[in-house]
Image (cartoon, rainbow, N blue to C red; front, side, top):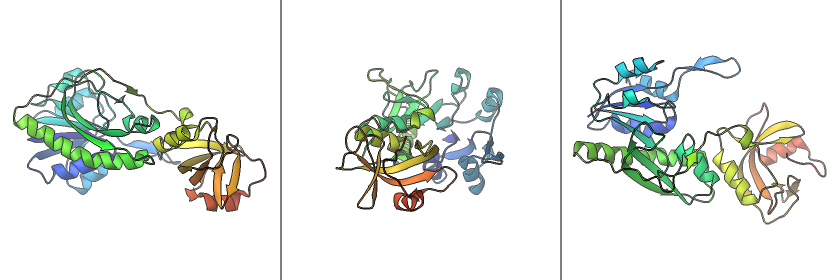
Length: 301
């Protein structure tokens, strides 16, 4: 089949790598236009744009619905993977077999923009991928393939994206085989549907008055983008790689125990693995302590 992929993040790369070696023809990729990035606000292309150039695959960055419609004419399937644009209804019927989406949750749970992060934040024991046919709703279309993935108690969103990106290849292959075989997708149920809202910087601030398990879930969910953060001496510090300690401290209170940096919560303290101070690179807690020189009673938050 003739496939066009619309994608922006690197989680799409395993599927793209499979497609160029498969029996299918990858006609082109579509990605978001270059965006200003960094302190200099210079234009930066997406990782999918870089991938396309490295693999000699035509890449387009449409700025309008009309332009997108022209680009997808002649395709058997348009596959979207984290593209970042909700396709309007008039585009969905242009490819011969419609438009598919590789979604990183077990639909109908976690429809929306941040399914991986919300699953970890909620403490879900299992996640997975779903390939479904796009309809005008928000991740509501009929389902071709579902693959499940059990979550370890310490998994981060970065790690889960990597795992689900690889798992998605199998789900996409099964879905394309189903289309070739004339198998129709199954209607998606609405029971148990939840919304994975876009993550704001404000909600990533760590509330040390929560219990240690909830704090751990939030930190792991928001690692590394946009990043869980707190304040120390008035400056923002990003936190990742935490473990729950047997020690107890008052919420936010910092203490070094056996060369470990502990922070109090409403239950057990958490041990900090890595931090990223404002304007500096990520470092382990021991290195940070060498420069911070903690005084008695100092706090995060």
